[in-house]
Every structure is written in structure tokens, then in C-alpha cells.
Image 1 (cartoon, rainbow, N blue to C red):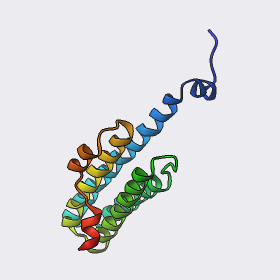
Image 2: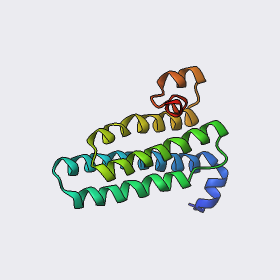
Image 3: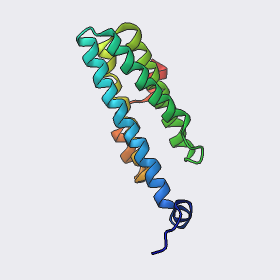
Length: 144
């Protein structure tokens, strides 16, 4: 049986590479949720060393997801993902500074919107459907 090199098989089927990349993004978001749970637990138990380890890791994952955004994505999706990742980093910085459990809870809708935005890219649906599902409204956020 002849083996096809990975690069050649990817060239024959570009969906394989896209699926693997998308899978990594979703795994990254799962990791973010896991670290956020660890941060919540560490704050509740007042284990500040554990909180800092989890905080360092979650910030690294989110920063990596942010810088790895593909500029080939549609502009509207790219801008929304960029804003959501940056907003999540701001929330995490607030949680880190103040050990704020409420701030941890405020990360959940951001993660939901990140998953929603990725779903809209991977499985397109109408803007009206997507807008009804959004939880973070940056226009409202900026107006106060």
C-alpha cells in the first residue's frame, strides 16, 4: 500500500487541515473553561499559588488564540473574535487583581459568544439568528 505524505493529502483535501485547525480552536476554548474553573476553585479555597498558575495558563491560551486568528476570516467575524478575546483578557486581568468571583461568572457569556462566533464561521446561519444568540453587545458596552 502506498502512503501519501501528510502535506500531499492535505493539498488533496483542504477540509482536513481546516477541521484540524477548528478542532484545536475548540480544544483551546475547552482549556480556557477548565482553567477558569480552576481559578474559581482556587479563589474559593484562598489558594493564591494555584490561582496564579491557572491564571498564567488561561491568559497564555487566550493570547495564543488571539494572535492565531486567521486574517482570511470574514472581516466582521475577525473583528468580533478579536474584540471578544481582548474583552476576555480584560476580565481575566480584573479577576487576577481583585480575586473577584463575580468577574469569573462574567467570563461565561464571553466564552459562549466565542463559541457562537466560531459556529457562525464553521456552520453559517443568518445574521438575525446569530444576533439573537449573542450575549455580549459591544455597542451597548461602549455606550455605558
